[in-house]
Image (cartoon, rainbow, N blue to C red; front, side):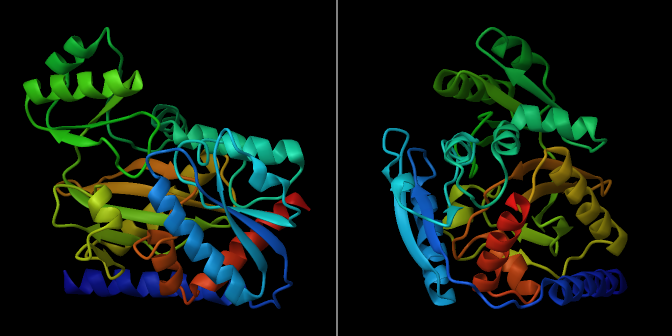
Length: 330
């Protein structure tokens, strides 16, 4: 396995150098930038952390930045005169295309994906259907409403993953291993959110690939001591491990990068996204799980770690996102 790992490592380093060579270092033109963070959803605290990190980075770059909390009933942050809006909102209102639509209506340039791609990627079922249309493998699934809980619970292969259809950060996501637990988990999620997604559990290696511009960033493996990479593992635990020297075949890692770009394009994403994967331990088949249009910018977040692996500082990453976003509006 060592020889395979060294080949994979060489592949990763080669990709990282290629990205570093192409990004360039242009002089930063100071802009008036509004950073949107907070919002109304369950990911509010994480969003505030992301917003603060982006705010500090933009100040270090020389931009005139203001960090603003925005909510569905308070759009006053958008009244500020700004050259650019950096969206650090996760989940409801920020990542589902709503705030992007508000910004489009006002003619304001903003970071990341547009409203349509954001709306599509936020819905895990619509995302899986689009990924399948693009020829990508995704775990088998069923959409569950109140009238089919019993039928799905009796027939779906276990173990399985239960999750809300349109929520991020693994909130209210569980692994179930018995029919009784499956029935209870489905009923609970349906009661809270109106519908649920049940998905085949893939036992294997969890990978993630950031897309910056239209190019794949280095593949990152996630290892946690928890049952899965849940909210605590993502944002609280200090023992979650993020590995770039991955013990998987080099051609598999390259395929995951290439397919991540396919997923990014299939959903109509641009500027930035993060594509999450599970690789089956027995067959080494990669299954794409979802696409995130506003990845986190906290100290635990994956895209900043991949950027660092490429030789990009956090400030470089933020500036690159700004430039790519402005390029698409010009």
